Image 1 (tube, helix red, strand yellow):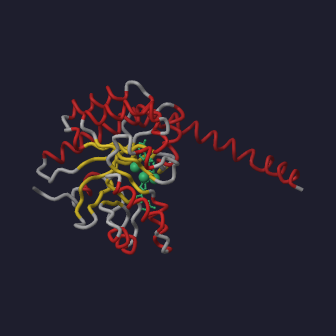
Image 2 (cartoon, protein in one colour; image 1 turned 90 degrees about the vertical axis):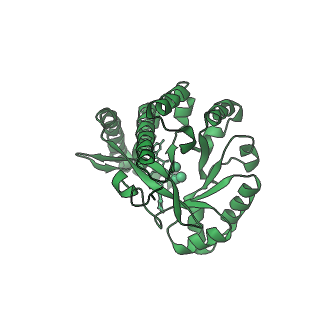
Image 3 (cartoon, rainbow, N blue to C red; image 1 turned 90 degrees about the horizontal axis):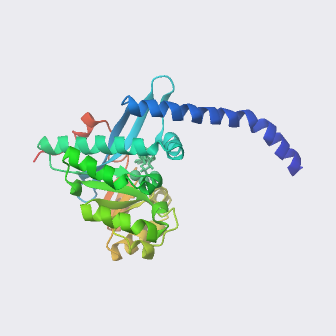
Length: 274
Ligand code: C2E
Ligand code: MG
Ligand code: MG
Ligand code: MG
């Protein structure tokens, strides 16, 4: 019976699979052009200090509206960019845009905020990454203290390999944050050996708060604080989650409750004048 199903699956999924390959190949070649012709936009999602409700930073997120294919989610094109190596170009493109934008906001008389930029593991493996980053800071004249890089737990699997690079980033004055914390397998004790500033608690755990399952969130916050990390909750969608997070002394967060990622003009409503 099982064997028969496998044959049915094979025949049935064959066309779907080739469609997927075709779409991926199309996305890869279109993405190459989109970067070249400046068709990728950067949106910014406010990061909030939970007690005061004030914005203290934004996360830069890539947005791609393809003229024919329509909206393509980063969940779809980032993995393709990573596999094809296009992530290096895309990564520096987004970093440049974000740093430039921050500098504009700083010079417009707003209370200065920080920008967080997502960095893929593959970018970290690139020996020219640090040079590229210094180049961008130098060119945009954004002070490194206003830049944070969001990296995933996979980057730090190999501590001996990642430590020198992280130390170098830290020495420049950049902040480092672990994105989607809790779904990988890095232990907090391993993390404390690295110059990490913040942990972003993965959305799935914030979601658990809706069903009164506080265990993991509470544990991450308590242990994180004991190890002197800043704690940021991602994916806060309702007041109930917010109240629970505040009760456990989680200081920072972001999510649709405050704002979805926004284009430049709309972020400005959140900024306060000096
Ligand atoms: P991420 O870095 O964990 O970013 C947070 C994702 O959660 C974003 O999805 C954001 O729109 C979404 N989000 C924020 N608040 C809420 C909420 O309250 N509820 C829900 N359901 N979702 C929320 P987005 O923009 O689709 O990005 C997905 C992922 O793609 C990002 O996850 C990040 O890993 C990656 N990504 C996006 N832009 C870039 C980029 O420029 N470079 C790299 N390397 N990765 C990127
Ligand atoms: Mg992120
Ligand atoms: Mg995240
Ligand atoms: Mg995520």
